[in-house]
Image (cartoon, rainbow, N blue to C red; front, top):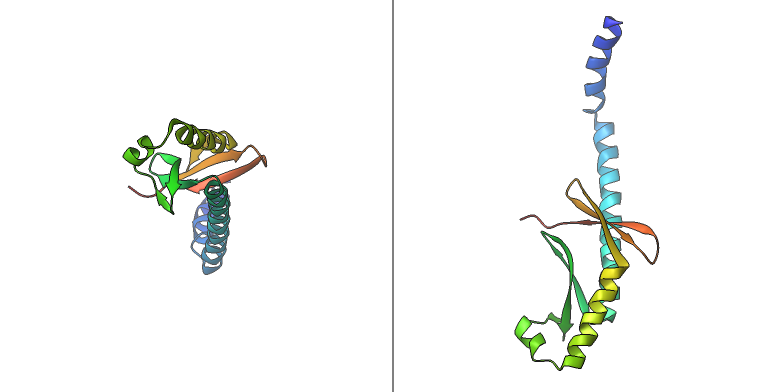
Length: 127
């Protein structure tokens, strides 16, 4: 039994140092990154149709109002009519309702898209 354990202690770490393992790992990471970017882009496109921008922050995702392709400054938002402000607040609430935060996992936030039931993985920017 001790011989088997010694052999496993030698073979197992070596398996994770092979070129084949590194190539497979890079492929998995690349696929995951593409999927993550695709989900973020899809959500961003939906946010834009509602006059919002989806931003990644160190604290997670936020939706911010936009005008002419730029995120509105607080003072510009405050200058809007109450009806315009309410429209924006409603759009933000709708998008926030769509995404439910589940957990933080290895530098990635995991949300569930309530409209599809799928988990969405979004990386946070480095601080």
